[in-house]
Image (tube, each protein chain N blue to C red):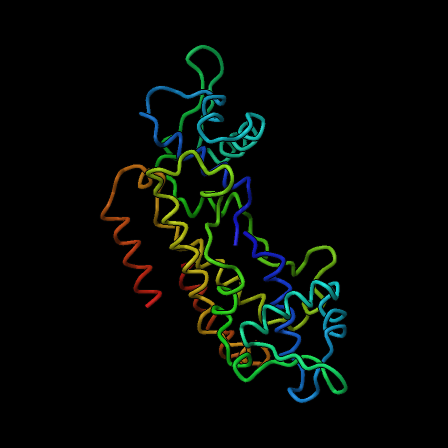
Length: 149
Length: 149
């Protein structure tokens, strides 16, 4: 099971920016180096993150990227939902569509499962990712054990 | 977010076999036609499903594929786990690995989310997929609404 490369890269960018001191802006090229991706790919992801009002980009001297106030408190689940879209996790309506589509009960079950994935990430904020909140991460781990139990 | 094409195909095969009358075996070529995949791909998926003891394959006259008794009652979550494996949903340890891996809190959160995806499918059996159990599907839908609420 994989998120898209675009989501992967976008999350790396958000994480890298969250790791900053919140004061000094980081250039897109510095971010590209830090996340291990081509500058062109980073630029595209930054554009999407700007559209979501998670990242702010300023040109010129002292310019560069930073998380917006919204971005710092944004839900990771919300960010992933916006990046991934809401398609099926299998090829129900690919080209060609699945011949078993009509009357298929699996499609709905997989949508519910996908929602569970996102819902698990909804309470987690970007700030949580870098705050060293071991209590939070401990709660996540405990939840995974009890759910799997 | 996508499951692998191999998982997609394997689930289609399981669904198609579950839709059978449970008496007449279906040949691999018939299954390939029904699920819209090349016979060679189907053969590979069938081999995995045999290894999981979900599908039984018999050669010769009156031969073909059928679900095993285990396969009919198997948990869909268990099947998907076995097919997908337990890797990360993003490229944490791809080649090259993610430069932000050390100290990353996102990786653990994504693993918990992935577990929530599988756990959502755990209570669903192959038999449920074709039993017309509207009550069960209704419960799934209600759960998705309340979780999203």
